[in-house]
Amino acid sequence: EAQRMEQSLATLSVMLSLALPELDTLVRKGIPSAAYTAAPLASSGTTAVASSAEDADPGASEPARPAAASSLTGLVAGLGQCTKQEWNTSPPDFYRSTFDKPCLTGFEMKYMLWNRNQGLNEGLNILRAPGCFPHGITVAAMGYFRTGSTLLFNVARLWAALASEGGLMSGFGCHARKRIAGSSCTVVCKDHAFKTGVADSTDIVLMSRRDPFESVCSRKIMGQWKTDGSAKKEAVSQCHALMSMQRDIYLTIREKGKDIAVDVQLQDYIDKPEVAVISIGRAMGICEAALASSPLAAFQIAMVKFLHDKPDSDMGITRMHDTHSQAKRDEQCLDLLDFMRSDERCDEWMRGNASAASNSMLREPASRPQKAA
Image 1 (spheres, helix red, strand yellow):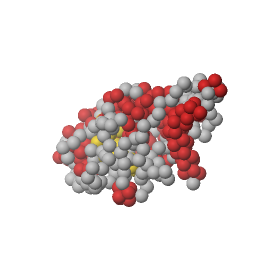
Image 2 (tube, rainbow, N blue to C red):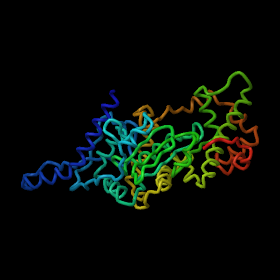
Image 3 (spheres, rainbow, N blue to C red):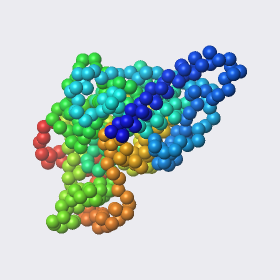
Image 4 (cartoon, rainbow, N blue to C red):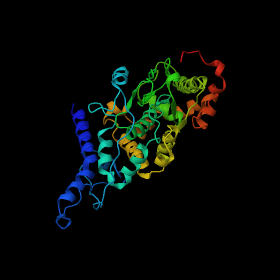
């Protein structure tokens, strides 16, 4: 209840911020310029990317504000709209761009408010311009277990939420979507496998991958590990299970005459975060002019950092889970690397950075069990 109240207050703050340019103009018209000594109402903002988790925390003390801007670019309304029928047929735990179930977190709403006159509004207006975002699409963020697919989902969610104020539904568990003619409602979902009918109704498939050692280690730390047999055998079994998940996602969508739009490695968010978030936006069909906006990319990077530092914030929207420390990996996964490298298939996949091309199971589609999709 406290989180929902925080979200509602943040929503109200953003709504008020949208009226600031007009309100500031009215004040200037009604008061002689010589008497207008206070800073403009639009004077707020911070640097594009928070320098620490504390700076990024909506509950943290406010950092120093920069000098007041002389004017503020007004924010145009986002296009796209979901109907009540679409809301009613979405999974019950999906968020729906409504006041009580927004698709933006408290941190994201506050970031928009504080950075609106640092070039962010200009970038948002480009993103919201007709033809820049393909409203009405269905985007599936996929990945085998423990790859960063939730992070991938959140980057896609934020791109779509920023483009549309009332035209996004997002959540965990992709479902077969029944299209309404002319719909401009966008759906962004996350899953680990295609359920029946989902591949047919999905327009864009985003994929995530991660160093297989880290994925298997993470599953061991989470207790998703058989302890009644050989640790080496279990490590190889876990690796093969993840390989088969990647194979099934790729083959299922290819059987529908489509393909993976982008396959993002988790390490990319650390090594080249701007490239990673922009590649996701490009795969979703966002126009190059919006992707060239540095404030928009900085917003995405700040969100990624905040989710890593505060994974329990607004979990209903983000669907994030806890992250593991290096100390935990060192404690529980000491022999895991050698166990996994002892298997030829797993070793090739690991050396290939978990790419689809290095997954031998993808080169042997006939070995795949037949499943409905």
